[in-house]
Image (cartoon, rainbow, N blue to C red):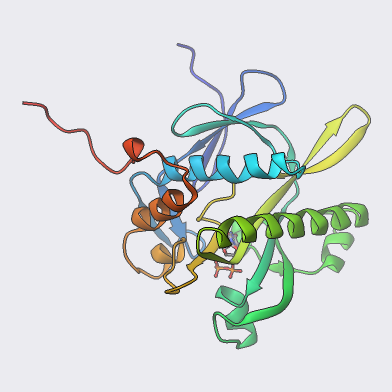
Length: 253
Ligand code: TYD
């Protein structure tokens, strides 16, 4: 079999050239990183869970008319997605104070915000993804004013969708990050949700107990990350029990 062409390898995913022009195969690794990759580990089964969960969220978004890059899942770890130009911004939506925002503003984690707050970080690992304003974005030409209007509306629609889906299974959507891509349809360009939506890029707390079911379990050493992600997948009905990825191959006597 011919080897595929690797386009890019990131911290949690590898991108390969897709079977047709304009497509990409997105492979989900088991690698977990935090604090700008200062903390690293391999969490067996994480890639399988995130592939399924991202498929679930992106499919739901496509169904309600929020365009995404997702085309179809190919296998346990790979999905076919539409190639796009990634806008170099991490678009963060927050419903409750947590993480860097709680720290920066001296707010207690868990405080409900008066309304969803959208923040932008410039995507640059070397700089640690610094927070930027729309002034920086316009001045450096990372996105146009029209793009920014579209990004804000996409981010808030994703927030409403994800918040509702999560609330239905007893989970509070504290915050999340999305990335936006630009695609060209003939003479027109439009923006779509790209990258991934998974517990790697969201904060998810159990509504009753406050238990963390996201990457903070890894960041803050709170227990098994696979158990947390499996619980999210189980509540959403995403992973059939038989394909739970945790078990290693067993010797048959
Ligand atoms: P934030 O509180 O700004 O950073 P940290 O996760 O370092 O405390 O993150 C807000 C949300 O966005 C959180 O759910 C994690 C997610 N996020 C990413 O997934 N990748 C990123 O590069 C950034 C900046 C945030």
